Structure formats: structure tokens, C-alpha cells
Image (tube, rainbow, N blue to C red):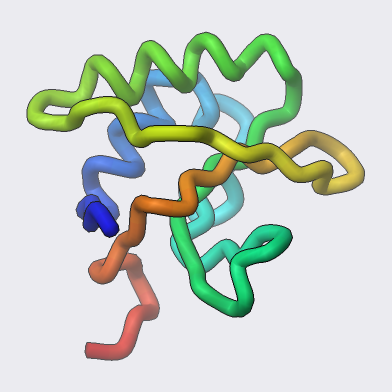
Length: 98
């Protein structure tokens, strides 16, 4: 599993325009467990519109030192979607106990 810093996740969310209407804690998930993950957690981003997928992809590629995150999976949040990456984790998110 690839580990990414919370600061890098905030930079990605900002570049993708996800922080225009949301605080980082509302746009970034660091402990999401999607379908079939058996309680394992990963990182994800809340999107309000499907068209933000392209902006998110470009933002991920634009952050220095990061390669592609691999396969993205989506789930409905009722209002909006979450795009999550099963192979990416974040261990330094605010509120994490270490």
C-alpha cells in the first residue's frame, strides 16, 4: 500500500477545486472503507459532480513526486460521490493517534 501525506492530499484537493465549497475535512477521506474492503481503509475525495473526475486526475498527476494512484473506485454519497483508492493510505491525518 502506498502512503501519502495529508498535506499532499490537501494540495490535490485544492488543485482539483474541491476546496472551493468544502473544508478539507469534508472533501478528503483518510479512513474510507468501501465495498468489499473488509474493514481496511484508504483515502478518497468527495466530488459534487462527475465532471470533477478529470480535474482530480490532473491534480493527482500534478503533485510532485506522485505517480498514478492506480484504479479508482466510486461510491454514491447520496449527494455527490466519493472517489477512493484502495491501495493508498494516509497515516498523518489530523486526529490520527500515533
